[in-house]
Length: 371
Figure 1 (cartoon, helix red, strand yellow):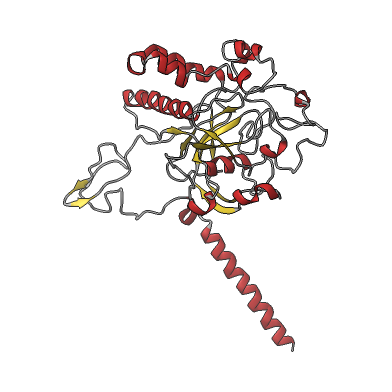
Figure 2: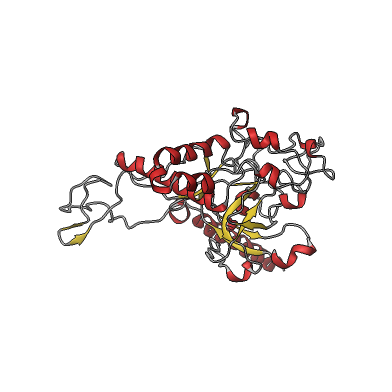
């Protein structure tokens, strides 16, 4: 009896050791952190005729009748100014709390997202001003001043047009023009204008890199809906809000975002309208105001059945015939429901609102080594 018991214990211990060895090998540098290459690739090999430095810029692609292409030198993907790296991950996209009225268009679905960079704040007034100033200086002959002012310049009248019986005159006059609001999020721009801003920003960056004989970087884009939600969660797979807990206030009773609390007490969170783009604490990815302040344009066209029609890897819906575009995050004039990480909303792509802004993203090429 004792021998049988001892044999079972030995078998159990050996099984655990074997399993641990397998897990360790899966997490080792060669099998997990980076791609394993043949030891002969990218080098001359023992006694070979090829003599060039590892990764040399002038290394041949074909020599002595063989392919000897190695990594080209000079490539690295720097973190763009004002952005943070969002690691790849997999999560249950969709509502993080029960909401019967929205359950029909917000089913949960597991999706996987590749790594990307994202602006740590919403695009500010002063950042957007660089764009409009550049267009007025360099692109009038191509676009025309009327096109620039009507399509791409922010519509400051939205502070009056969006609300009835509301004195929005001070915001209309000063929000985009006064230095007092330089670090506040841009509003009054359409989805089309946000897309053109990304195009302008990409061209400016890569034109400079070409002049410096550097490799070009991926384009700036609006984040997809799946990227935006993964970024908002901050690596917490199923949280209701970006800060992690299910409540809109912390233990001291301080509100965690800029929104419409207490049946309309707009000032309770510290700001009656928008707040500075870096107000409140960032989430675990280092992103500010992923809930509240201004809702944010996403790349996707809105569809009630998006769960059914989109893939589960780097999900995006680029339906050019659908004028409804996804907005996420809620704003200073919204109730707490719209601040939830899984809440979906939309606006027509040509509309300009006093409560919708945007931020940019950039795809990371490859898989980063996250420490």
